[in-house]
Length: 434
Image 1 (cartoon, one colour):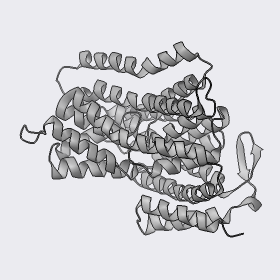
Image 2 (cartoon, one colour; image 1 turned 90 degrees about the vertical axis):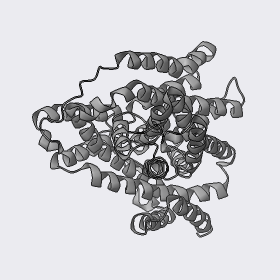
Image 3 (tube, helix red, strand yellow; image 1 turned 90 degrees about the horizontal axis):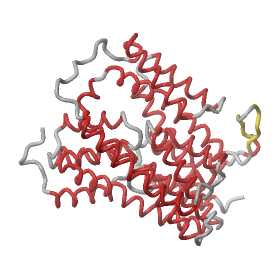
Image 4 (tube, one colour; image 1 turned 45 degrees about the horizontal axis):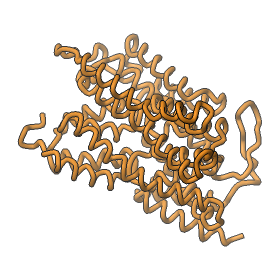
């Protein structure tokens, strides 16, 4: 347990949290490692056992696990105000950077040199997503049943265009049942651990849910009252509010669903622009799900009435960030007192185990979708929503940069930011070749 001697004062917590927020590059793995080094190893504010239990708890929740872990650490050290400050400082630096980049993108997206830079970035991001599949598969697919769940998830999404929330919810229900009947199929021990006998903190959780839900909904009520349900800001807010509830497995898991809806259903941006946004999010500190802010900015920027494009874009970015991250505080504040019980719940472990396995298939689907968009100029519909590439439209520049990036990231273990910078320069230089 954290002792009184190791508990920082509030000012020190703010200072260290701001530093972590500015340095939290590298996606969730890098962010979790950074917080572990800063808060567990160096300052000993949180014990190793507490940190690992909290990380497992955050994997149970929808949304970015590193963001929720930061909120939990603040809550553990200084209650609600600590959770608010640490959680906000984890997001704000990256949000400001990607907002500035989104504004630049909105103004310069049609310039040739800008497009050339992003050709390289998108190719490198493809390699990063493939690496994410390999890493997660290595950790999550420990049994044949879990491998089958990952394969079924991929086929349902890629070939049959199954709704992402349905895949996640279905995997959770199957995992819940299998944990009761055949836990060995999921790599779980029969029986599980006994639950603690301490009182259930219902009062705290109900209060946190009511207050959190009101805060989450407040800007949406303002949009509804002032602009109505037909305005783009309302549609943006509703879409990303729904997304915040089903984002199990991190940003990569939900990106294919978000791209499908934002590109094909809502027509807020193109598939190529979606790839550009992911490239921007990879280069900024903070959670990768911050790519949602880029989508919200462009959606409102391109349908600004009654505002100017810049004002509409800022409102779209702000609303998207709010409805994406406000739920993180709600989940943590409502459920943190239950962490010990959730850690020992066998059925919940089973649900999470199979959701995690299905997420491997979800990210593999994202890899396939993204590869088609980056490597080929033309796709041909072949059956239902399934499209395959026209081989003659292969972009050799993107292919070469993607292959080199994969080698540097997977084999040479290069830093992501370094690879993205090299890929951007390579894309610009190769644009001069015929």
